[in-house]
Image 1 (cartoon, rainbow, N blue to C red):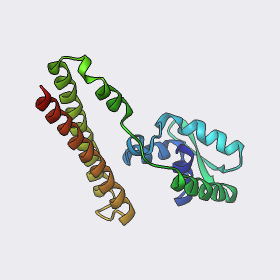
Image 2 (spheres, rainbow, N blue to C red):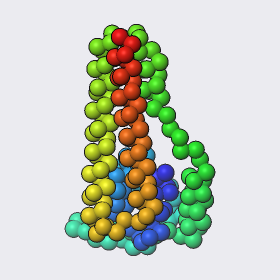
Image 3 (cartoon, one colour):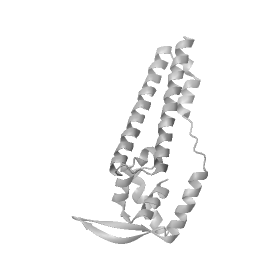
Length: 179
């Protein structure tokens, strides 16, 4: 995903690695895109070697220099391939750790299981609030002109979190019912 997001950003406008990092942090790409922000420079260097990006200028900022990257025509073709590939891959991800733990919940006391699920409930609430906060910051930064597809993405993210919250609530209710 790092390559796709970096090339997508550079297709909009040339940027330095730092500016790309800031853009990805502002959009909370670590959370929704699975991008490690620290991997940006490595990806840029590798894609420069492969001919997908080039350094178009070096800017002086104080005592430092920063390289400004642009996408190449080869990079645009590669970006299209990455986009098509990402749209084809199954996006279903199961909460396997939670499922695995619930498969053997009876090995814990009811109280231990309840406390662990309550922690899961808190984690999901924190996740929802973090996504909401990030979305609100993005909305403000974009002067309330968020593209329709981004709104659809955000709605789906909120639905997924809500579905997980309902699942944990149902697991807690079942636990109480059985004991």
